[in-house]
Image (cartoon, rainbow, N blue to C red; front, top):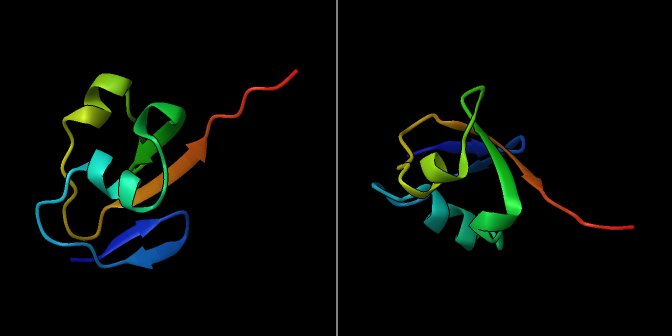
Length: 66
């Protein structure tokens, strides 16, 4: 399976959930905004999404500051 995330190519195991994939990349699911195949995911959607071959992700880390 091939997944594209932030213009990089990954080959995760089949049937991987999006939260598990994000964790493997070092992200905390509640601290990122994710776009999957051009559609922004809500936090509720993110938690129950499984990746499929050729999915394209844009992952943006949320940063707080002042």
